[in-house]
Image: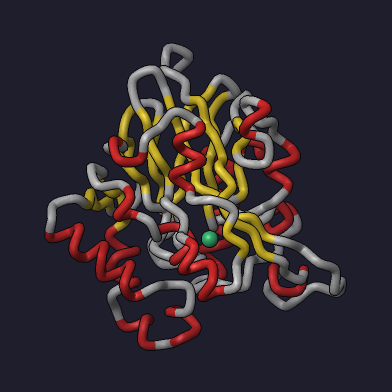
Length: 262
Ligand SMILES: [Zn+2]
């Protein structure tokens, strides 16, 4: 196991929004305190391979949904030495607007996605605004076009992409949400994406309220605890604390990106 090639892993912050704590926990929260949300994409880089995880949204989507757009996720990637136009592989954790916009900025990429996510985003549940709200139909249609273009690799459940990286179906938040397990110098790390928005969702046992299957969401926390070598290596998908718990790889990246495996 120790002979595996480790990944450097980065969280790249590209947007934020003010929220109330009560909006972040199913059943609300007794405190009406503010609890802002950050938006990230992630980069996993080894000597031989680069994976981008999710593609974020753009200024137009930020304006439509009232989010503060800080910079294009591809600018963050560029500051970390990755040119989006050359990226070969992008893992899509799920098809919500904040994870799957911008894929026109990755013209060479193959997208790695769960069967069940594409079925969910194009099926019966999208007739209901509760489930459809966080999807953008044009992005889903664009992904369908990528399917016909041969640019989507589908998985049905858990899959090892290489000995040092695997995808794990969780569901819960959406039908086909997947998390990413990476070998790093700190051990096995899990990028939770929206399987755990905030550390408090999992640690306090309080699900995030955008959900299709609460039981699956809660099972997902246990699954991630089995996959990671330490609960501290389960990286929440929207928690601003990520930016303070981890350090920027260089002074220029302060407030833009942090290295998760250092
Ligand atoms: Zn999200």
